[in-house]
Length: 444
Image (cartoon, rainbow, N blue to C red; front, top):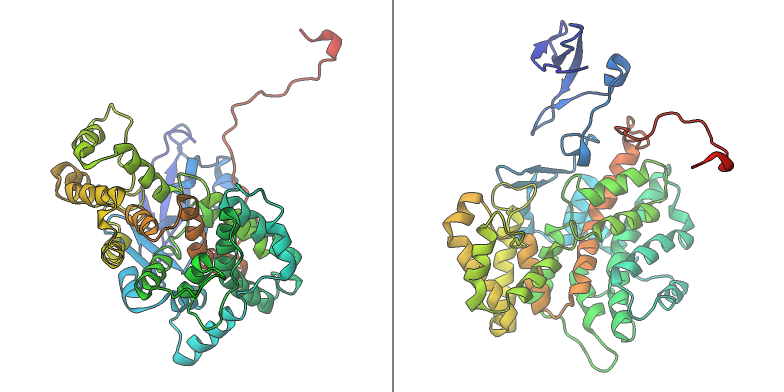
């Protein structure tokens, strides 16, 4: 079908559709439009190949809806992010991470009783099977924590056979709780292993973010008291990163799950996808950029380079692929960032001082304002993590801890979707056509 026109028409049923017209034959094909509760309409192309013999070509699937979801909504032009209809800033300000986990999984905020039970269920699943500890010792000391995360998450399927039957709702619920509960434990132990410190067990008397920080920084040598400002900051960061619609890692989890793979394997696949520098490594790239700049006196030089379209240099942590307005998460984390720096007295640290100055200049520079290149969530999260003493190799790991609940919610939704099929993208083939086999003595 060449040069197809796409006028909106009304079918006899009164439903809106798109009429694709083949300019060579004059034949037309009606494709129905599906309307969501908000956001762009979707053209239903499931019958396109049967009716036309053509596929669509959409590298990166940037114009293709792969599923019908009720979990997260993003309006990049308006700078809106909703979890089950709730604005992200309201959740970050008034809620806590486990309450948001319940919301993403169930669709509603919990009652007092539901919240208590959910927290109890998560807290009682934070420990790892003792034999899993042998897996950690199988990694080299200098292994990247994300490599450890991938391996351990996938290995959980070997230990928890009572939660791998994806057709059983009870199995899915238990697997969901286990993944959300155990991911901070795995992350903290991966960190401890990488620096040669003893593992610290989870504690049931601590809240989710507090427990995570305790496992990260406590040692058997002395008592460790979690700073409440840092715990609240970590809780907010987890909320802000809990889900972000059909991004690369979430789509990976759904695609792996569409084959019927167990939930632990699916989450391991999501972790692997998140590891990519174009996805989960952006906040680490921010600190690398700050180190490249080196000092406040060099900021004008790099600002000038960022404005030069012929210069490959880009200011990392500014702008966003989805948001063409201010990232709604950045407003929350900006305030949190300054709270952490004030609490720790870290504003005098050269790299953090440099980041604050860069933020100030970019927010007032006409070029950045016009291009809507505002500091995004990755810019501020990297600064917070550095101020808290978390190494850059752990940045993406913390992202995985937060995003696990989003992956689990999306995976559950996919399993329960009656129209979901195994993922099987098509291709545009430009390789060789049929060739007969040539015996080796005749090849030149």
